[in-house]
Each structure stands twice: as C-alpha cells, then as structure tokens.
Amino acid sequence: MFRAELDAIDIKILKELQADGRMTNVELATKAGISAPPCLRRVRKLEEAGIIQGYHAMLNAPALGFDLVAFCMVGLKHQSEANLKAFAAVTAEWPLVRQAWMVSGDSDFLLHCVAENLTRFQDFVIEVLTANEHVDTVRTMLTIRQVKKLGLVEI
Image (cartoon, rainbow, N blue to C red; front, side, top):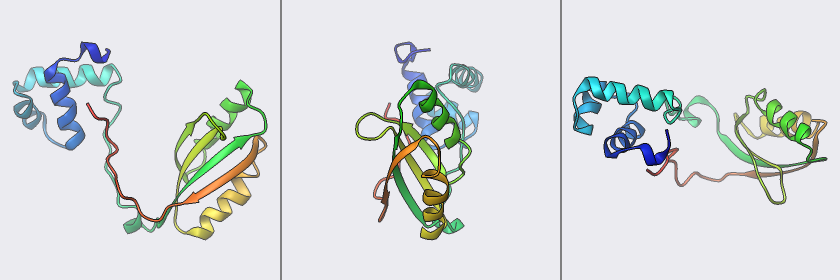
C-alpha cells in the first residue's frame, strides 16, 4: 500500500493513532467518522501493509535513571557492503544504542545513545565502539536539553 492508495479516512486513522495509540477501536472509529468493524479492518490492513509498524509506550528516560543522551558519528575503516552490513548488525547488540542510521557525508553511521551517566557512555565509546574492528573514527556529541520530541510522521 502506497501513500497514493491512502484515502482521507486512512489518513485520519493514522493521525489519531499517532496521537493516542491506546484508544479503543470504537473511539478511533468515532474520530475517523466510520463504524467500528470497517475501522478495525482498515487498521489491520495498515498494519499488514507495514504502514503501522507497532505500538509503543513513550518512557521518561531520566525518571528511569537514564540521564545522558548522546550522538556518535562513526566512520568505518572501509565502506564495503560487507563492512557496512556487519557494523549495522552489531549495533542491534548494543542496548545503549537506541537508534542507528547509515548516513552520507563525513561519517558512515549516526548512533543515538542513551546511558545512565557520562561514565557509562564513556565506557561504551572506549571499550565497545572504538574497539569494534570496523570502526576508524568516532565523534561524539553530548546533548544539553531536548527541545522537541514528536517521534511522529507528518501526514
């Protein structure tokens, strides 16, 4: 299913679920202006098409003891397909890395990291990240304060 195949009701359903993924199907149907059974069919179709990838709770990291957010720009020694795939795969094994992107420009990967504190982050960078056989350079950026948090797609 491509965006061109989404009608106004599908778009409304997606917007409402982004705002509140916990609402009941009846509530969603009411907001979308349709009855519950076709609403549920549409949601399932959007899930099966991979447009809705999942439902998550947004957690307050500092309240759970994760006070540090940082980004790492990683350059690999060699940009062969095998090395890029190998490094991408290993990021999945690192709990401190919450999101990872392969990027263009001066770096090959951008890692979004969340840690309990600076010491834990430094240990990860020194003992794990820079020790990886594929890594050539690492540049880190510690965040000061998050000023915007949507986590949504503008549709």
